[in-house]
Length: 275
Image 1: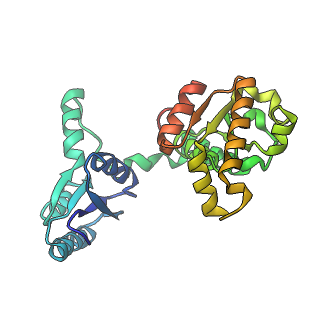
Image 2: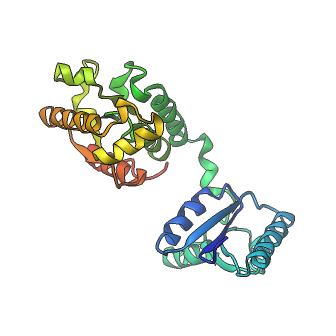
């Protein structure tokens, strides 16, 4: 491990996924390589001591104290982890305490509060949306397209599937995705199954060089991956989207989060937060 790599622990009484995502957003501001180690379900003293042992071992092994993000609401467990040999960043004390002062009320300090919603309508909506997106991936089904919140279209390997699943998992959106293929370009119009739902359609586009690179990883040396073929498909897809007045975004240098946010803005969805 190089001196530029720093160990990061995420210690949580829940899954730690939210804390990990937050920590990654913060650490992305620094030109340093980080190795993340998530320590979930720390809900008793033994597990807290085990976490401290792991943190201390990492400090000894790499010669520098790890960075430790914690979201432990139990003050006793928090105190245990706080004694570890690391830079302890207590996310609850950083944010919850000032909010308690601003709101004039005490927080619940309930463990796994974020995940209490497994039985709520919003949670069930997300599960239903994920199932819908899986069933309507890559044009597998044209049934119930009227139920879609958005239908993503684009040529092969522009990011339709990951974007659809991200919209479903994060926002509970029923996102279908449909490929544009050479036969569509020859006909000069959208696939007939999509025509009635033109207002739900949003396009994904990509630069030819990047598309060729991605396709070569999948099918090396194929006509499918040739740069000239990629340029042809991109030009044809762009012309079709212009003709059909379909908005689109170029995904080449965008993250899934950025693509999804653009889609949300385009379809004017109010599902901008988790339920």
